[in-house]
Length: 307
Ligand SMILES: Nc1nc2c(ncn2[C@@H]2O[C@H](COP(=O)(O)OP(=O)(O)O)[C@@H](O)[C@H]2O)c(=O)[nH]1
Ligand SMILES: [Mg+2]
Ligand SMILES: [Zn+2]
Image (cartoon, rainbow, N blue to C red; front, side, top):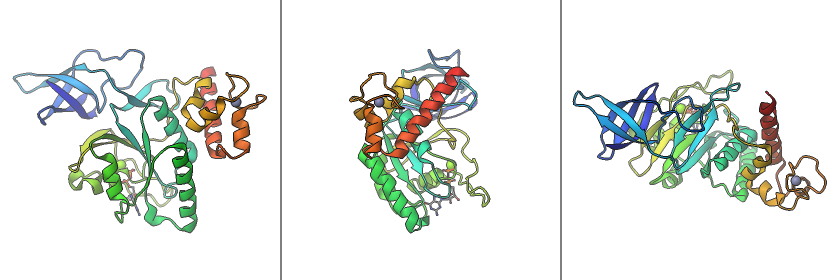
């Protein structure tokens, strides 16, 4: 029988079959995937074949090829990949400019990783009910920046409901991955979109203004008005595994566009002569924050190479 993995904890997988049943399964055999050292070989979003026994137990026996998947490093020192989810139509990156603040480096790392895995991203700026005039101005600047590069942006409040209908339209009939720092309101947004989703909401600790971790594994949630959302555990940072230095600019669409006019075709856009990217930054065609994020990833990739 065919199905989709909608949740997993350890070696137990919940699979939704073609006729809408949810079956609890174990993995059978060795699912080490070619070329990836992963903490879990089967992930939410995987299309699988299951075998059901007369005694009610069921096993996953096969995984179909993935259209795409997104990974992060299991921990900073680890070279092991942690696959967050597979077969994603779009990723929503939930961002707050305050309570807690999401840095542009974090946003850009996510965007570059998604580009590398060919997953379209829409930015969702949440908690707009909390922002003062300065925050709003900063937010509009960010939205202008990211829309200009080509990333769609939405503004939402899970508290007041503002922007929720646009979000509902956005996710219709897609499998959407919801990502973002802990505490930005991912679970709250899901609860607004789907009343009976009953996602646990974290309490913001007054001291750090960071959310507590309440989501510990990825789970796919059915939205009655159309679509599925994959809720992921709060992501601290993205590893940029498997990227080579010359490749990183390919994942910054606007930097890539300018890089075609650099003198050297292996230019890393740091301080090489006649670098069209550095010139474009100086002339404000490329934003400084994006360029900083580019350099930040480059540094990281170089560091891990010598570790
Ligand atoms: N004022 C306001 N608070 C929100 C909003 N969205 C979420 N929160 C609060 O932010 C905290 C963290 O929310 P949660 O959904 O658990 O974040 P998650 O870690 O991303 O899933 C909770 O206290 C929520 O009530 C919003 O749009 N406005
Ligand atoms: Mg959550
Ligand atoms: Zn260059």
